[in-house]
Image: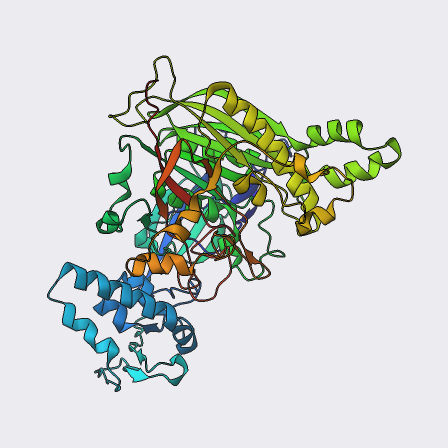
Length: 601
């Protein structure tokens, strides 16, 4: 006889759009134990597993806090309602939660106000109230209590606390609605604010009768998927692009002579532990949630080429490759060579490059394993007595994935007279260099090794490259402090650390463009004036800095536009990453390139 031993969910907080895939432990008629599904179509010895999902619909429908989605809301920001922002962003679970988020609310209100003023709508006057200096009581009636608009001293600068409405509660009646049949269920917007129940029971295939009582599981109330503030593309090649700041991404797709490239470290699940990111709610760290959130974000950018790092090998095969294939992307993957034990299984991550099949075809793939290069280096340069110590320092299992793509349409533009017989080729290098600050010599050696390989590939076919000092300037200052960490002597003489590729950082364009208007000034403020790179691309509780870059060959490509950078307000208050809104500890970088025409000679 088939029997259910245990039913468990990885997270008891269900989120709209994220699959609920329970762990169901079964004892089979032959006394073996399995977690495999036993559907009615494939019974075992005359028995199958029947699963039903129910929504517990009570008379009261609870709103959910926008900051702490596992908590019911008790306050609502009236300023968000007046600004016609998404209602879900207006809810808070306590006055402290509302006060802590006030800076973020001010930013959202201001952006909505500017958008309305630019569009010249009749609601302009609505936002004049936000700049008044006196408190305004909004009033109330019935059993609802109103906090009113009152000056909150903690907000500073005479800012106005836009008010909050306490939500009322009614009735205690409950009704159960069947919402799903089968082991897996994906919550919908209709489920928000309600708990779900799963019933699992063994059933006789002959009689259709349940064998014993069902095993049940109750979830917390369903919460809406947190929605981060959309990021816009900022034109950097000309100032006449101001009107396109809020243009739909679709308008940029397949523009003649341009292509877009995304670089994103998606944070492999094997590293996304509560020990490492204790500040992130456990449900927001679960892979079942993060994978859907990451996919939504990646697809929203509509990039022609995707360079993803820290892609776990099983997640590449089971999720990223098949899901992105549905949206027209072909995939190439290179995993590391050493697996890590995660406590219950071994896992490994790597680099994945995707490209749109309607724009590019794969010509060739190159794989770089820095461990192999380290073995060759130690045999050639390191004395045998020091070889073991050298390999211990150099073997870090980092890899690089290089693909040569051929454009299926013109990436040189309609006016370019392309040289006869020249294929429109693009070389894309995707890598995850070792980031330990204690091993600066290893990092520099890996970069140099990759660049010399790219140099050979590019020279062989005159290919433009879209892959700090070494990359951007082609050399390393002999007095650079990082060279002092060269305990193995693998970076000497410093003069050998050079390359002939004319590489530039795509995001350095933000430092070069004129400060014409608030949008451009804002991007300037989010750049490091010395490195000409973003102030940060990685933001955790313990680290804030730049680890992600997009470099390109400036003699064959120009940057047209860049995805805007984030600041603390975009990240929602002072939170670190990952968070419910952003599912990686890195932020995505996206650049639009235009190929320079190659004229006939």
